[in-house]
Length: 136
Picture 1: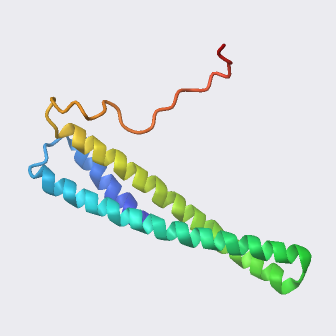
Picture 2: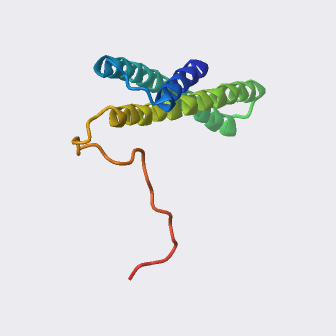
Picture 3: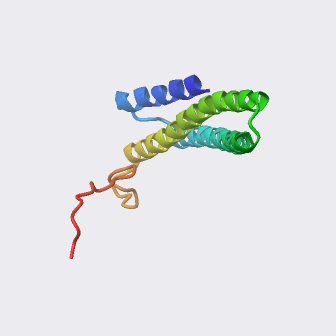
């Protein structure tokens, strides 16, 4: 899944970097929005599975603390070994969907007339660096 998402994102980057105007922008935006919905659904399912594995792993750890046994230790290690790839995969999906949001906004910005003032000039989350000084 991660490779498919990366390939799709790379194709969007190539299209944006080419600077060519999209002929049927509304159809393209609909298809891109449908693709974003697909990846959002995939991300939600993986979030639920990851959350379930995390809860089960913590529950087995708690039981292991009170009733130490080799089978519980093996179960805990197996769950932990499965949990780490689930977290990694969810991380890839989350970042990929966030990238698709930014690319959608970039395509929207490049293909809109100048008079569309409702579009922000910059996309993505911009945070001010923390200076550490208290303002009085």
